[in-house]
Image (cartoon, rainbow, N blue to C red):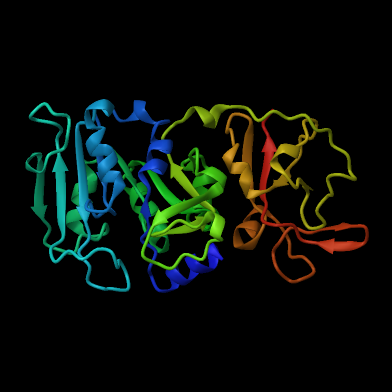
Length: 330
């Protein structure tokens, strides 16, 4: 039900969900060494409700930041960013504590007007982006492709939230394959509760008042982290019965990441969850197992006329769930 709610919000362009401070802290604690002496930009944030601004402002000295910049979007379409009600788009600059109380007091925060509406794609917001070393925010999911493209164009380091569907975007997957983007530590259980006015249809046991539960959310980054270089321990042995060979591609199917065989050196199709354990020193990514990107990897059409990996088990033709094609490095 949460995904249905997310899709409905996206269709209405209502996909601005505000991240909990707890979730920000749980992820950011793994990146502290990256921030010393750096300028951080949060360019999809209204500081009145954004916990990204709160996190960096109150941890400014602890992280050793040089500067914090936050832009506030001016709402011109009530169906787009319903929580932003600013009549004037602004940007905020915080250069740290001045009076010794280690609190970002209002008089210490520079508030400056923007000529436009504060859209991250505007010229004046791009000028602010150029000043930043690291971008940290939760961009609208519907604009994820454009947002990442801009970060790559200006060669920025970043830590941002996106939906797992982005892995399959033709604009995003090649960046993952080329080790230009990878997944961070993530949300517990692969789901996040975001501050939102939209109706939440999560089950009673997982419902939180004033929030919407979104499954399949990830942190995407290009900042180096320890997790990224930890080897996945392999203990299973390959057998043809347990690992069916695809009929339309020279590879075997692996149903769970933990079941990757230790003694198979060919190409394997693994679940998307593999990316949580992906170590580029241990594996290489060959391609994607479905859609147009599968065609590029050499997957031929199956019996349904679609470009999806397929195999036969006990006489029945099957197409597995989404697969990423990988191979162990020698």
